[in-house]
Length: 340
Image 1: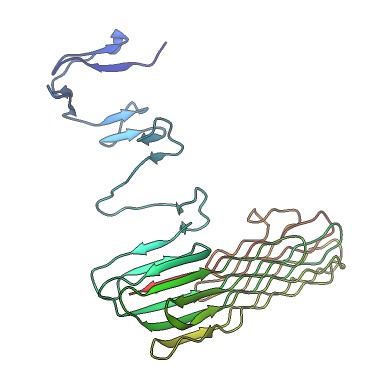
Image 2: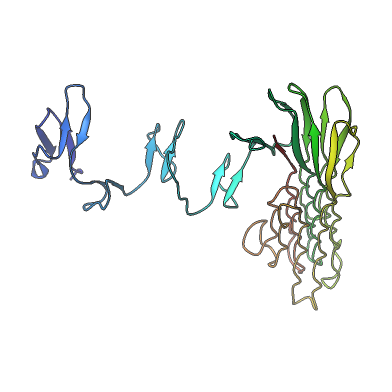
């Protein structure tokens, strides 16, 4: 038998299909002459016989789409007024966030007080930003890409080292409205079965002004190169201290830091035991990816090496073990944050 359906025929005339579910009550559903539908009293349940709130839905809800892919699927803009509580991770530009907030793309935050505006660039490659009207000073934080963790080759292999983190630079810039920042965000190194890939540099120049700021990328973790499980791979080096060649009339350096080194893989006592992979180096934003603890576990799976999550952090290395090949984890891309 089909599910009951509700039809609105006139202001206080209601009928249902099948007839056994029919109900007429002017205190419930109402439809006016403009085809507006009202529920005047009580709660509405979709999939719930006894709804405990004004609207209770058992299943997915689509707004602007007839085939929702999640509990709430909105096609178009979403405006939220008031406080919002989210129990879980939030992804913007990604449907598989790995932290409480993961953004795949750039972030712009605007405020009404001086210094309350923020522009965050995480997109790798070249990006430009133009200084807005009435802005004459800004603060920047620049981080290079993190190195990847080392992997393991077929059969024999000691634990791989974690990748090094990218360097960090913080500076105060004297700017003029209309100045164009040319920004390159460093890519995180790519993990494989050998040495981890190096992270690339992040840099900033200003059109028409000589000099630049460069935050170097971290180097990849070192593989044990198929040696016995009792031989460990070395951790990658953090990016060397950032370089700064903009004129002093334009910029004042607040802080220059090298990236954190990755740790070496832990030594296994025998071929029957396993040593942890090295941990990726960290930045001022947090720690690097953890080393793997289980052979054959995929990157970011339980027991597998972890990708660098915070900007510029290194990826984790693989554990020691005599088994199949295993990839090290990627390093995280760099970042530029502009406060103005």
